[in-house]
Length: 283
Ligand SMILES: *[C@@H]1O[C@H](CO)[C@@H](O)[C@H](O)[C@H]1NC(C)=O
Ligand SMILES: *[C@@H]1O[C@H](CO)[C@@H](O)[C@H](O)[C@H]1NC(C)=O
Ligand SMILES: *[C@@H]1O[C@H](CO)[C@@H](O)[C@H](O)[C@H]1NC(C)=O
Ligand SMILES: *[C@@H]1O[C@H](CO)[C@@H](O)[C@H](O)[C@H]1NC(C)=O
Ligand SMILES: *[C@@H]1O[C@H](CO)[C@@H](O)[C@H](O)[C@H]1NC(C)=O
Image 1: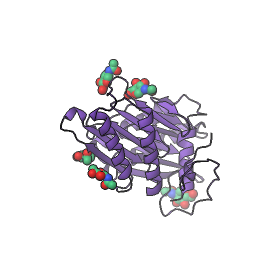
Image 2 (image 1 turned 135 degrees about the vertical axis):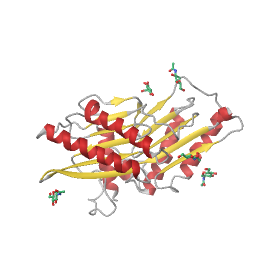
Image 3 (image 1 turned 90 degrees about the vertical axis):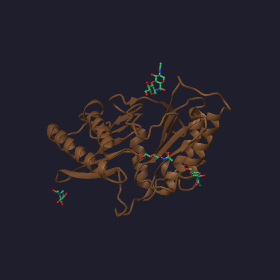
Image 4 (image 1 turned 180 degrees about the vertical axis):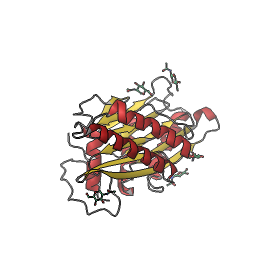
């Protein structure tokens, strides 16, 4: 998987919010440079230097240091004798992010979330190809659909719209079925629309969710992507804490055995660590 594909993925995920035609659904604040979306709960807070605070720090360390162990996702718990101080955490990397890119993303996301969400007992931050969240609630067995972020591709689908909608619906539901039964809860698919046009779609859940819950979450995300968010558009993305779906008319997810990627776009970002170049978003 080439890093230029990540670049494409990022471009679509993060720049659409800027020049996006139908208003995106953003239940999140935006941080610029590096670009990230985040939501810190404001109504349940902790005191600085409390046990909970220190447990969040430990949790973020664990997420960061354990970032390469699993295949791009990881859930963990920092337990406390006082159960009110227990913190649950999770990170997820887009399935085509390499281990290196995933770890870099999680490291950066963990830094950002702790600087942006200084007193919130729960928080989520989407950064480039990964997201990180933590909570005082045990969320490893629940379907959560807010806060969400959704973007539509600028471009309307041009062609036989009702046929396109049917193909999209069938494809996304097939992707849902396959993702919810896959051990890593991820599936990607492409289908022909015409001889020279393909539709690409993907769906994912955190691996901690059961097949039923994953399928339930994806059904809601698909209902949203095909109606509310991105109806009539040539692409779109819906991200919930518990699952995500995406479709585009171009291949944004590259299987490992894909054709060699085109050369890396050059970057002028001054402080990019090696390997991070492909993830820099033009401003
Ligand atoms: C955070 O998410 C909640 C829903 O979970 C939403 O009501 C709130 O507006 C969001 N905050 C921001 C800053 O978007
Ligand atoms: C405060 O947060 C809890 C979840 O921690 C939520 O159930 C409740 O509705 C929130 N209250 C307000 C006023 O936002
Ligand atoms: C990984 O997580 C575990 C707890 O789940 C923790 O004990 C450990 O220190 C973490 N880091 C590494 C590098 O293993
Ligand atoms: C999809 O279209 C390609 C040509 O672009 C063709 O080779 C392939 O067989 C088609 N697949 C299906 C399932 O029709
Ligand atoms: C990770 O999630 C699973 C649920 O799928 C849960 O059983 C397990 O305890 C969690 N692991 C940690 C370290 O919290």
